[in-house]
Image (cartoon, rainbow over all chains, first blue to last red; front, side):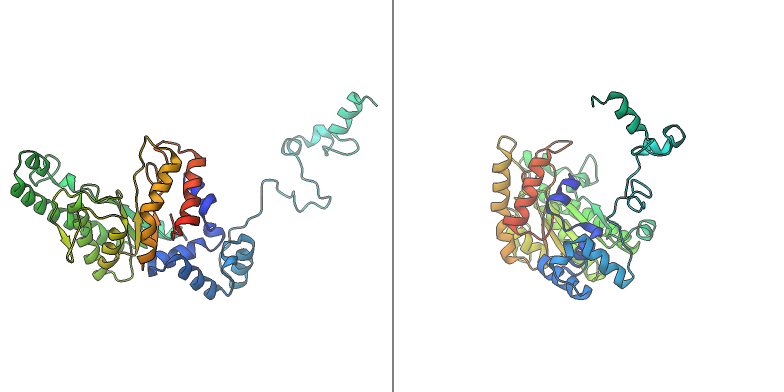
Length: 119
Length: 222
């Protein structure tokens, strides 16, 4: 249920400025509008930016504060590969059997397609 | 608490639930005022409640001082008033003491229901009778006592639809927004403010209740 509330009504928590707005409410007793304006003023951004995780990531970086990266790291080297392909995890474990690639010439899928192709 | 604060960046507040009933027999030392009331011994019940309130206030202060000294960003007295107006009064006394000793601490008071039951019936906080208070008056009493965040709670009616429960809760809590000087957070948990009582609350009901609190109630948090 906490996740439901966070997604339905939350600012974004620590990936945005949600924790700072919460601190202003908890420690200073500021209401939401006042807390958002205070935090936005301190960070040098607009109130709308407070719930934007990408904008906040930039601001944290500029101010030298800790960041929670909003990028997927499920595929090591996936987004940074030169050919832009995201390697399949199972294929990555069996490189020797698949000839080193999954798709493309000599790859596993290309052989499978050739066997079953009606063309 | 010290280890928690070393590891976390997000604010940490300690939650405690006042329950005056635990301070009466057989769980506590004071006489059981519920039994006295059923026998018609009003004076005896009032005396027992007074004794239990002293124990409770001391306990709340003991816990609050310990946890705030340990470095908590704040503390939360949740389900305040579940044992009636005396429970509410004990918590307010503890809040006032903690506020005077820790001016910078965050102290949240979350209520147990939309209506303070008058078990004692004659307790007053700064001239205002606590029995029978609805969320707006509960907020006013809490912010006068030094509370940092007020959490209103409106219990659901299990025979009504989620829509009805949400609308009922918003109707009762909305007047708080006009008079609040402190953040007003609706308690949107199981069995309150439109969320069904379930170990795994349905996301459709919970999310609709949350959005309604934000868009219609204009609360400061959940």
